[in-house]
Image (cartoon, rainbow, N blue to C red; front, side, top):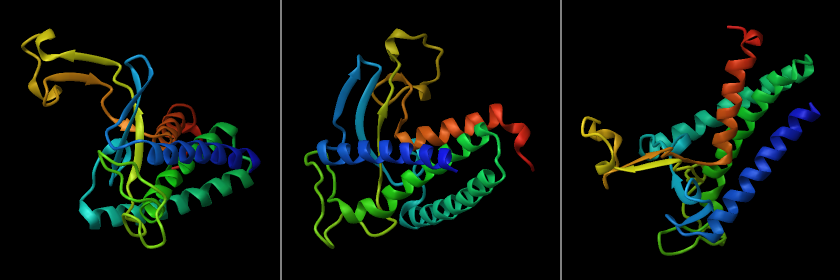
Length: 204
């Protein structure tokens, strides 16, 4: 149990520290190069799922938040049972990463609207006074910032037979385009680890 708690703690702390720093230091759309042109911190927020995907307006947002909470409770119970049964560390690792990532994004949607003022393309958010946050409980936005435009081409540099949908509005092709956070990364790593290395322990 101690190893699982340590993994969850490390993911949550790193995720929330970076998100809060981004929220209180950067305007929406601001970009800070980290390693050359292929890794940037790019501040954006989303009301939906992982990697910036959106989901159905206010009711969709509320439904997604409630689903996340129920899923996190179920994962927490499963993780507790795994540790009681002394399950293999790889299985505990993957479930701990998934749990921590899901919980990290729930914190954003549940509390950031209450704790912070609205971020904009011109102003940096601040700690909100009581009742002055930008959204209600479970209606906050998830903070994303990790951006890896590993490969970028202009339309004119590539063959004409490539379909137009692979390019953005300014006729650029960028890989990898999604912007995400540490919590999203933890979920992704946990799921891939589970499917690649721990399938023999899964019971359907």
